[in-house]
Amino acid sequence: MIILGINDGCHHNSAASILVDGKLVASVELERISRIKNDGSFPHAAIDEALAIAGLTAEDIDIVAKANLSRWQQIPYLNRYYQHIAKAGKTDTLIRNFFWKKQFERYRRVLHRRKQPLGILAQKPYQTVEHHLAHAASAYYASPFGNERVGVITLDGVGDFSWGSVWIGEHGKLQHVDHLHQVNSIGLLYSAITIYLGFKANRHEGKVLGLAAFGNPEPLLSRLLAHTNSENWDDLFNPELVRVALKFGASLGQSVIRELCADLSREDIAAGIQAYTEKLICKWVQDRVKELKVTKLALAGGVFSNVKLNQLILALPEIETIYVHPNMGDGGLATGAAFEVYSRLNHGLEPQFNQQVYLGTEINRDTALAALEKQGITYEEPENLALTVARLLADSKVIARADGKMEYGPRALGNRTVMAACNDPTINDWLNKKFDRTEFMPFAPVILQEHAKEYFPEWKENHITARFMTLTYTVSDIAKRNIPAAVHIDNTARPQVLRREDNPDYYDIIKEYYDVTGVPSVINTSFNMHEEPIVRTADEAIRAFQAADLDALVLGPFLIRKVSAVQ
Image 1 (tube, helix red, strand yellow):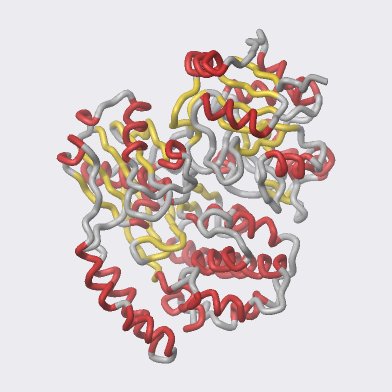
Image 2 (image 1 turned 45 degrees about the vertical axis):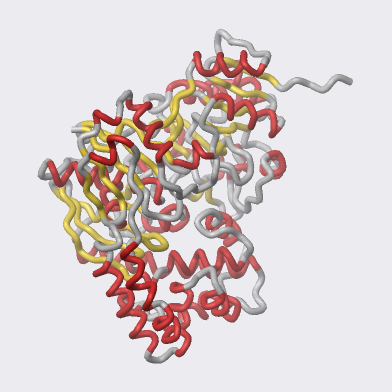
């Protein structure tokens, strides 16, 4: 059975995935093709690319799985949403006015027709999957937990009028436990503060996380808690915070944020919202796992891109291990929808952990050579490419690598990566300037798994999610000495723990670097210019390499060195 999964119903991160007999074989987000960050247009081009990656045609598709409900299917969720608004509006004039202004739109919106795939795909049978069920399916069916009983939790800003959900995953099926109401969305509150600090929502929340380590969470933490009923998540927010959830980027919500953040520094604001998020969600998760009688969690949704939060959840005494879906944001909904529909049609699907996250467009010898010759670029093909690159890294050179299939999800994991030595903390400022970025957190390291425990004492071999750079660890003294450029001010780092079987060519570079320097780790940051998606093709890799003026580029089996200016 061949299923095409698509995320077409949100405002960002449209994507397409291909599932063949329950196995994920291809996935690509539209942004990588359109070059528009977080592109939310209908993913026609992503569908075509995913089919090409899988070696299939539209005729081969048996069924289409669509993430997000239709407007008609959303009506029960929408009615619940307005019930909560009406309740909050009883004591808040602004919310009551919002409620009545939205009534015409409430009923008119169901007339909106959903866009369809082109050609024969429009004639294929399809099923829709509710937003948070798609997130849950992406986490559970791709998890390493097999038929064990596990908790499945999703948290994000909002989707299908909910901001989270809870499930039990067992014997290849998901059992619903709870959905969380949009009007209580901590994810939207975090995005509101992201906007207040001058950043972009759904894009720069990671900057707020990095900035938080430089600040004091008080008094914002206490101010937020004073507006929060943490003992009842059905009524978590008081009316002031409900306003934020209703219009987090507009005056209705931003006026509340301005009052809460009055006279506070940017660092203290970031620290306050981060501490609030950690405190509430960790306690809530702790209560849920006790109720569900589980020790392992599968997690998805944009809130779980917060790597510090993930570290704290993993550290809870009730938790043995967690698995965060590598594409935890809405780009993973296409995969989750496909998994869920396959499970429905086949009476369940035993979780099949896909160790490979290299599911996108491929750069190989032929495509690399064609791009180099087209642009007249001088290149070489070293007999031992890994050793050549390792020596350049040891000589403090900064090298991009674009080889093999593009990574699935937001993290660069070696195939569309920029590498540099971690021994000089000033490399962070240098890279930020080269790529025109503003980051408050050091760039993340990649480390050979054989040395992960030495550098990150809390790491364990069953922390599979660390292979995808989805949580932070407190570092050891040797890490502070050997890779200071990757260590944040709070003594944490976000590693990619690398095994050779996951990416042999990338592993060999780090291994050769270790043999040369005695350090089993280098910086790994995504290969893209500021506010652009990660590069996809060989042509894009060459352009980004030249624009950033890096020292060298690994393109397939070839090495391109920077051309020095003529004196």
